[in-house]
Length: 379
Ligand code: ACO
Image (cartoon, rainbow, N blue to C red; front, side, top):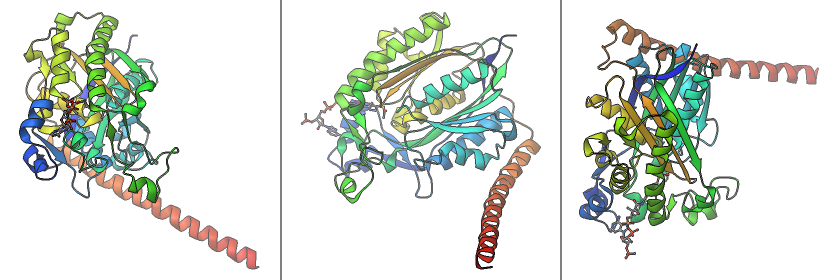
């Protein structure tokens, strides 16, 4: 029997702190007018000191599981799409897996610049369509405020923090993720990069002094690249899905720059009502931008059952990707019964206790082994 990967849950989280263009103008030589005119951004969210990519990913994931009324212990796989993981390792996805108590799930991070979420959606859906897995949680989460140079007006005005998640589920109902196109051109890797902190330039006092742990970008070149690939990847994904351009109900692009989105929409001859834009409120949240936009589109009643959506991304790598989705869930989704909310909350508490007990158990065991070895050695 044919299998399809349907999006059955979605959720987002953005930090409460808002940083406006005027706030930025008091820090660097810029203005609200310049930022609005060149990018379309008005404000962005900034993570609180205690918030990280994992904490925001967990909030978005919990919201997605709540919408789907899904049990975290049934998850087969968790993919966190991010360029700003909590650590180089362990993967942020493992932190999410632990917090959710997703005891059966595999977990890994996926890194393809701002395109990571669309890449992850392609990977997750194929895992389901192939028959390997039934439930895959795909999260896009970023804390870009931690890698932005707040004295560089070329980059600091663009980015924001946040997270979005979708739950993919195996279904016999035709639809879901119909096609995926992934692309890369590593020759443009130097156009947008975080130079230090990897094996080429390990973190040192020198790399810090030279500011090599901040985003470096050739804005003009990225702009040209993005306008080129966005419409092209969309057309390719539509061709693969055998869906006509006129049948697209909503075009959800990576929210980097309003002019890039407009240029792609113009090339695809899409009217404004079919183009989703929310970058004015969040800026470029990299891997989180597409799932956050999807959540807000659903909230604004701009998605209906059997609609065809396109989600398209571009970013560091250089990378680009597009997926076509036929929406399969009737909207609005009925509120889950109160007891399931309480039950899921209790499960997350238990997951935290379980994680603590595991760590404690490991510490006690290693202390006992140490004692045993010392005693035997001296004996
Ligand atoms: N405020 C005021 N002036 C500024 C600012 C600012 N914040 N930033 C740059 N300028 C100045 C520049 O210094 C330049 O001045 P100069 O001519 O005296 O040298 C002038 O404005 C024009 O600069 P441009 O780079 O030509 O401006 P442009 O119209 O290209 O806009 C921008 C710059 C907004 C960065 C644009 O190029 C862009 O959006 N590029 C794509 C960036 C992007 O999407 N990045 C994310 C990719 S996804 C990912 O993987 C993270």
